[in-house]
Image (cartoon, rainbow, N blue to C red; front, side, top):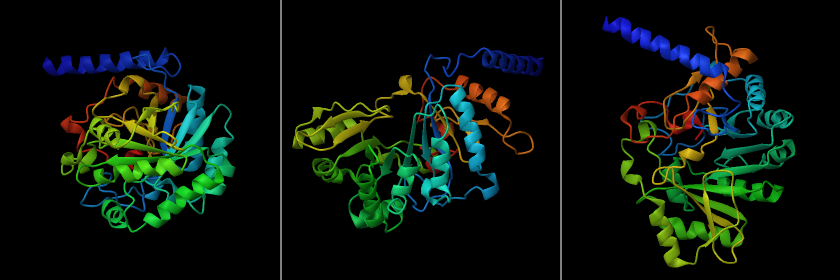
Length: 350
């Protein structure tokens, strides 16, 4: 009897969701948030091995045949645009390790209704591609940079690639990608002593240096929880050294921006742990293997493939987009135990 009742409840929930999907107002979730931003992971592969992104035991990449083809991604984005998606961000892994990226960006830029294309990259491969990406239609970049010291950069990323990353940053500025944002994951006892040096970059360059709280996500979390440091503490440290004034820069994301007087750039603070910004979240994530993920820190995913492993037709993609929007939770819970065993950051796209 209990089994029958449980099945009836499950069937009832599925039917209710199906009905809600049919009458869903375009791109609004059940909390009233307008979903207009899609983060697209085009690969789970990366040329770095960042300690907070990949587990210490190593990684097992998806086989090539499991990764979405560019033409499949374009088809998915077209449907997303019909449902209100206006902006996309290309992520990885490291997106620049995938061949054909410039042509893909050019094809994306040709989609009517798409207002902005950006990219998150570690910049180690950017110097030789920045000009081509800019011509293709890429507007701006977020660059992950957690240290300015060669030995520490190598310790954090597992690679001696700091010079290449710095060359990539300079190339992004030179070709006119704007804004150029540097994302710094602040880790206690690892790189938090470099904060003044990173802030100083904004004095001489039109860079937006954004400090991000360490997020306990995936199998990396078990050994890294002691790395967390609140950005309130970081802000106090900077404020004790120099004046911080609110910046007129207002990004479309969750960062709170300040600047040092006479600086060319700004300083941003992103606080996903200490001060959740979930009530303003306007995004879905598309994983490299074809799953729509409503929340970075939740295991809910909607598979866009049919039963034979093919990406479904436009009508089915549209239905699954709506389903993912309705499944979007009201807020994350980074410390919920059952998120520890699922995907790591490199498999989601950040």
